Amino acid sequence: SVSHNFYEREIVTGNTITYKVDYSLGSLYQISNINNTRVGQLMSLKDGSTPTEPVDRGGGLDVVFLKPVYQAFLETFTPEEIRVLAQNDEVLRIGYALNETGAVLEVRFTMLRDRPHLYNIPPQYLEKLETKLKSTVSYIIPPHMAYLREYKFITVSQVFPFKSLLDKL
Image (cartoon, rainbow, N blue to C red; front, top):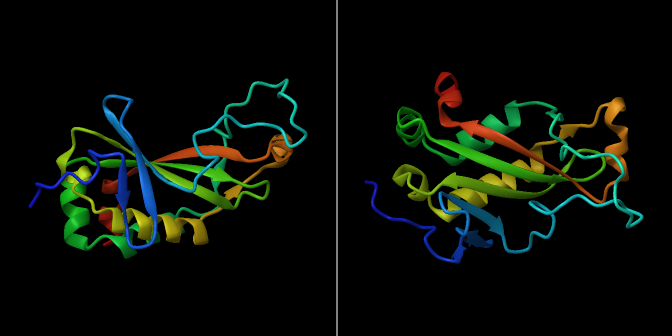
């Protein structure tokens, strides 16, 4: 049943991770591990200087394999939950902070605020997703974007439609 809104508050807790919820953006919830210091922040160079090149925040980077992302969702949600989320066209946006090799350091989730099927997802699920994504997902930093390695961290985001899981159930 869709009734409970877990995210209309500033702090929510999973089993071991505490999340900070930012709903100052009006139509969105941004849900971030309270220990995050990088995801959602401006990228800065390791030497402390300001970049001369405008950075599209790693926008052109590709994930090494999509399979671990799908796998993380499939291991977190039941097939029934996935079907309901897919039928309702739900989408979860995932923000990552990466290190210079493309490994995931931090994860942040963004969801539309007026979507009961999304705000009904317990924080324990996000916690499980975060843990899996951090341990299995990585990004490719191609040679022509090697300049990204000069940054303290790289931020990228990924839009994840639940519909993309239907053929994997």
